[in-house]
Picture 1: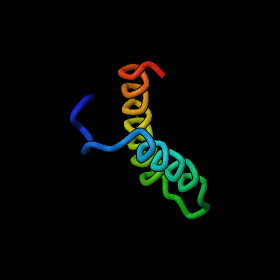
Picture 2: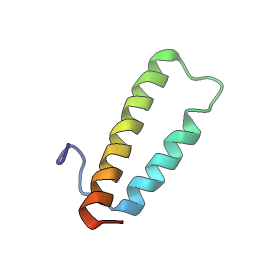
Picture 3: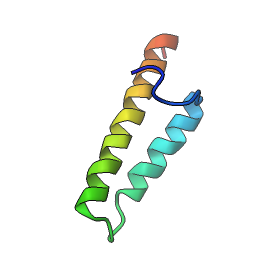
Picture 4: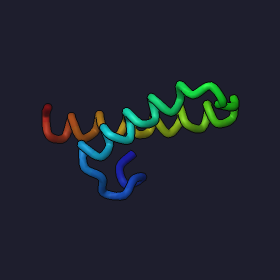
Amino acid sequence: MGGSFPKLSYKNLKTIEHALQQYLKRDSISEDDKKSEQALLSKINDEIKLIRERYRF
């Protein structure tokens, strides 16, 4: 999956992850928005996993 995101730091990705998790909890979310935001969250989580593996933490 490398290269699908601009160069973001681990801290930036964790901030985005947390923000998306909270944003997904809103009452007014449509099913389409929920699906696309969950897909983005999955990509963010994959990128976080890659960084953890690369730097072994």
